[in-house]
Image 1 (cartoon, rainbow, N blue to C red):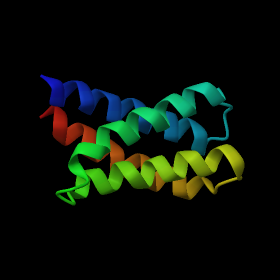
Image 2: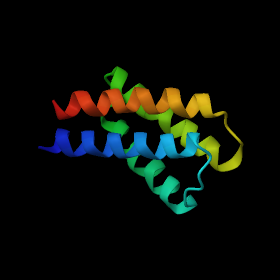
Image 3: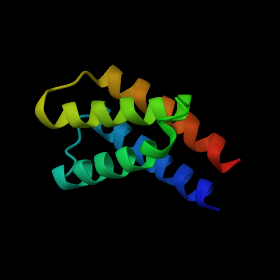
Image 4: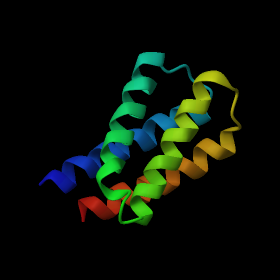
Length: 92
């Protein structure tokens, strides 16, 4: 059940990344909240060097950089597809 909740969260992050790719403004506090949750979610699995935790860390870095820099839309789209694929696989 927890895996499905985390998969749903991954799909929500993918939706936010697609919104950022369209240059629609997203609240800063929402991005910071997503950064914190993704970082905490990936910490237990970082020891096993699981590919899913590496995707979470990369998405966290992209979201963190998006707070300070203007990031290309293609990076957001690639990141959204990566985490959406992870979310869909968690829901199956």
